[in-house]
Length: 152
Image (cartoon, rainbow, N blue to C red; front, side, top):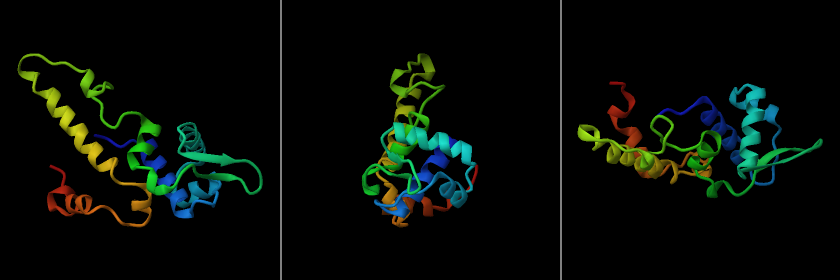
């Protein structure tokens, strides 16, 4: 699985909004500067997040962007799906839509299991969890395993 720059930027922008609080709007320039995201790229991402119902925007001097609902009700997976589409795909196809034959037949349940594990983590962790630096214990346990930090 790869996390695209677009998905990474979308999550980081959403985290800036989560950290700002429910009633605070942030301008795109402020988010871009805080996270080192190219401003024009961020504008497109924020538009996607708005169309996806995760953020709202307001024009004017006090305008900007804010989360459309509380940060504890927005999973990291929600942001990634709006920015990039399905969490896990194979050749751009969702695993249940694939079929294999012969010795490759067991690949389908393998890809489905990979998708289920990615979902388990990204659907469980919310913007509020990350913004408060309070990741679930299961996620911390996985991240603390020494082999998690090495590249085979």
